[in-house]
Image (cartoon, rainbow, N blue to C red; front, side):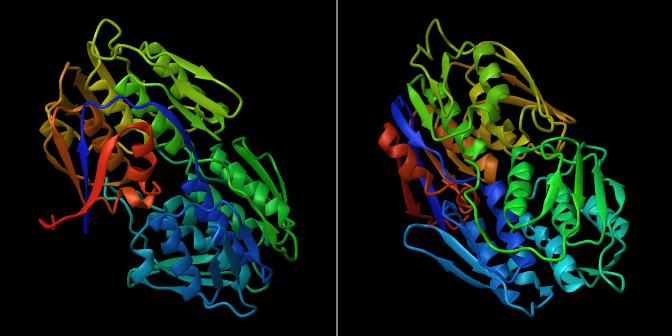
Length: 432
């Protein structure tokens, strides 16, 4: 097991390029199950979650290849296995997106209930309701989701995928993939509008699917008999881009995030400007400008509430909280997507942050100084927030259990070092 050792007090300067989006590439890779022809993803990021997805696909009988360039190639066989066991699926929640394409292609799916980050219960009820609306029989049996299509295959239907916490991104992706091979017309109401869902839909169209309404809460799918292969570059990772942008803001340095979609991060840019962080924006870049982060230009406490896209992303909530720990004043952060997503609070408090939780809200009193300490990562985005806090804390911060961060950031220490961060990866002798 590894840890990251972060030395605080160094201003970041320079440019960092953004990789393909983790939350886009996982369902795109799963879509390879819908065809016997190869799917090629030239810009697949080198993440542990991608490796896990490839292992799941291999278990189902797919041939997978990671090229020297980093590109990934997946080809499903004519006869797919329809069972994905606990060993690989338990490692990440994104594995559940194989359910839809497996069910559509083979008429049956037996997939272990997924694992992943541990912040609260994240049910997949909406996914299952969507499959049932397409005519499938679904049950939970011995820790597996077991789904069976009716005789003759899935049938198009009109269905609603909203939940108490808004739209479901993976649920929309799952039902969207299943509907591409269903007979007739499917109308998905309450569909997720996230760029990652739109990206998956455009990949499916490149494979031969008939889809309209992507990027809106109403998606219409006309089922087709078969899909073919495709080459698809997934969109840049907006969460990775936002994380590095916040890192620049926290250290007061000039950090340009290149190769991103600035339109995907307009709400973050707006909140940064509200917080008195100087930001410039181009069509495929965003840059935090240098400012006196510890002096007269200290960031202003700024409230955020997470919402479905285009609202403030839940996946940037922890990183924003790290920025607010050094802001001037009191900020209120409200989590509307995953109300229990606050496991980073006690770890930020170990660094000297003044934070407390009231149900789905966190109250942060900014301070002029954090102090380095040993902290433990509990999930992917929490671990990123702890690294960011370590960049500005006095002394050294040891971030344990960084296997979480490797799920969504490609060797984060190697991306931050060229910007001036003093950060290194070490074997964790404590094994916490």
